[in-house]
Length: 304
Ligand SMILES: [Zn+2]
Ligand SMILES: [Zn+2]
Image (cartoon, rainbow, N blue to C red):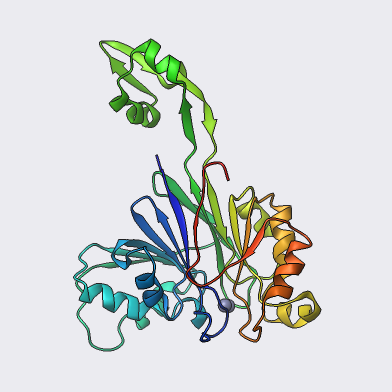
């Protein structure tokens, strides 16, 4: 059972870094385990400024191989080596991941003290990691690209009065959730005996770079938090779309139509000094919206 899911906005600007914004990276801490979604330049220094330790990063999910989404990887990996990491690191990405990452990780001279496991994700699918799963779907960009969702496992709420009545020791509660039943003094107590229904898991979705596309709504459906790119404004729509991106208006529509609860905008074109117009047009479609700021953190609450 997961108690805390916390988001770290480590890089929030699109295309190239500016003095105000690093390129893309979102950290997610699931209890004690760190995940990264994209790893643009500057990710490792942002991590050092945040409370998410770079040594806790266990899995990295890359949306696509435009530089603003992955060029921070070699530096981050070399620093992990300097820090004495020995645990394996998993990196997931779209088609081409093995060759791009293979080349990237073989540049320069350094000694790697840990194993890097690279997995190419094809089509749409889902990987189960126990307490949470990661789903992915093809995004609508100019090169092979993925959008991702992290979904917490559904979890059975337990009825306190029934736990007492049946005499189930507290240390067996997690076991009964996982296995469906336990033995107490020779009696079999099943989950149904003490269950108070199911709590849906929290869900965090991340669009990566994409045009607005209805086929992504299924992946984003009922997200607690949808992090969606919004490269520019509707007034500049034809250009935004021609580069494979979304406007603030598009992001608002995706949040509304996927029945998401909160929208966070990210990946602003570096041409914008003030991203308020993008935020306002998203808000005109979907009320509960925030523009990501560098080093912003957000706890994803159970009741959010
Ligand atoms: Zn990008
Ligand atoms: Zn891109």
